[in-house]
Image 1 (spheres, rainbow over the protein chains, first blue to last red):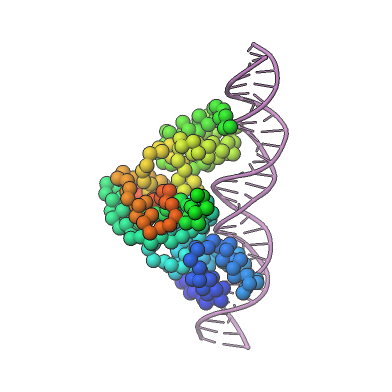
Image 2 (cartoon, helix red, strand yellow):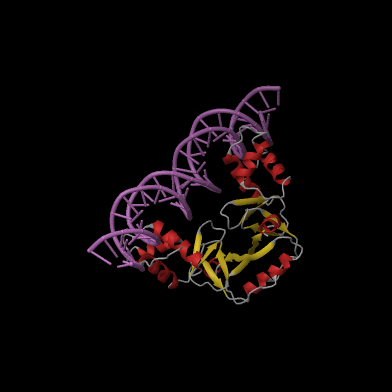
Length: 130
Length: 130
DNA sequence: AATAAAACAGTAATCATTCCTATTTTTGGA
DNA sequence: TCCAAAAATAGGAATGATTACTGTTTTATT
């Protein structure tokens, strides 16, 4: 039913995301692509970001800053949100697996997964605060 | 500087929240209070929910459904979001303490805390799905 | 090349939340 | 108890991210 058709814009959005490690928002993707595609529309960016998320090619990060961020690295890893400058950084740490089992014990529903991220001061803001 | 003044509306908002375990949204609080306070305004609800959060008397839950939920229980505990019906439920489980230390190891910034919640099917939706 | 389906650009609409302003309430002192 | 200053309110306008709509363009298939 889906009958997905190829599009240059979708390729460009995915390629752009793959070049960045800062987990940009839809608006940043839009701005970044306007040089190469002056007529690309914000709606197209949103639609494709959602589509790529549904396809499992990228992941959407919904942190507490109220704006969605997107990450081309779909592997399980943790994120950090700086409460001062708002930047988002990958954290290098092992996966906490048992946590879903802990949550499921004594719960009659079905745990499909969890959302976990960290917040505080990023290295740059921490240095600046001294 | 703060010079907080008493208000019936703020009392009512806090009292309403304390009667509920379902972590209502601002709009639900607003609707629930309109019987007793027909003229209460949505802005007042939002302002006081933010104020009470800042005072540490309630906590704001920012889950991935895009709407803020509020909880009068400020103790550390975990939440579950049903991906089908959208309900939010408290989970009975021990606190995972070392997770912040794990995240902080090898990270040059400062970890202030983490956000962790679970998602899946609530007991009612799980039963219905069989 | 002809056709149908999908994607697009551009724009309007939605929805949660915040902001603004004139009025009302609270509170501490005369 | 009355007064004045500060804080809070109601009501409505504004914001900002995201989604929906529509007529046009692109893609893929025969």
